[in-house]
Amino acid sequence: MEVTTNPIFEDFSIAFRSKSNWQLKKAYWLFSVMNRRWLVAIGKFFTKLGFALKLPIKGIIKNTIYDQFCGGETIEDSQDTINELSKYNIGTILDYSVEGASTEKGFEATTKEILRTIERAANDDALPFCVFKATGIAVNKVFEKKQKGDKLTEKEQKSYDDSVARIDSICKAAYEGNVKLFVDAEESWLQGAVDEIAYNMMRKYNKETATVYITYQMYRADMLDQLKQGHALAKKEGFYLGAKLVRGAYMEKEAERAEEMGYPNPIQISKEATDLDYNTALVYCIQNLNEIYFCSGTHNQYSNFFLTALMEENNIAPNDDRVWSAQLYGMSDNISFNLASKGYNVAKYVPYGPVKAVMPYLFRRAEENTAVAGQSSREFTMIKEEMARRKQAKKA
Image (cartoon, rainbow, N blue to C red; front, top):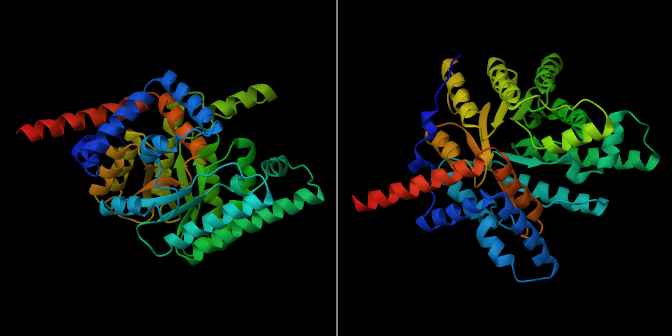
């Protein structure tokens, strides 16, 4: 199918209608900073230093980068963000973005918080999905060893079994609360172990509809085949495949590890190859919508428009619950708000957690915006154009 334009994302008056003039100016300043890699590096250094020296910088961070990309410090603090997005028919995916748990006590605390997000989302249309990272509640080295097929020690086996039990409790809560649940992506040396558990969860909880969704990172050369294999397995065993399609998040790390350890880099040879597989995956999911529920998690404008064209061509209603789009809070509002305004199912990933604890997440957002070709520039340009449009409208 030939698709060459994406005009639905060019209406910035819709994209930024939830933003006041002051909020737009603040976002304009923030993305102008993130447009400069050296400023991001300096900001990261001084932020870490400020926290280490216990300087009073929390307020500055909270009112700038934190406010742009996070919903609040707690689920309750995020309610205003949930309400604001819901007003424009955009769902919220509460993402507990505190990282670094490495003990059983820490894993249990994280699990309890994830269960709280599911309890909050249960039977609330404003929160259609919840999300968790399996490695946030498990020992990574154990998962890595499990994936390689190495024999686990008695202690490691208990750790693994405890992790599976935690994951099962999360999936069961989502099933009972009628909440869709994303199992977030991992590095390739962990993803297989996580997928094995996730498929078992789908066998248990995806009989009537898709509750559990596996994440497929299409920047991996083998992932389109894995999507098809997952679908074949689901069809054979009688459960629905839940699939979240993304491009990916660990490209540099994957390449460095492959070179260091002497195995083929699992990442696609080019961005074009990734884009082709991503869009082919969209076609595949649409063609097999009777067995696949999926979410297109991307900031790529072409892929988002391509999906709307596919749905129209196949007579799939914009609000069909089997098809969703998702973007990160604070980014690509021209995609999210314009899709939602036309009746498509859209949700925003809304991270939350204490300011200091979510700094690793925020650093990644800033670095990714400078690394992804033109991302900060696009955000900056769109905000600039909307500010100019409002100024002109005021004069008229």
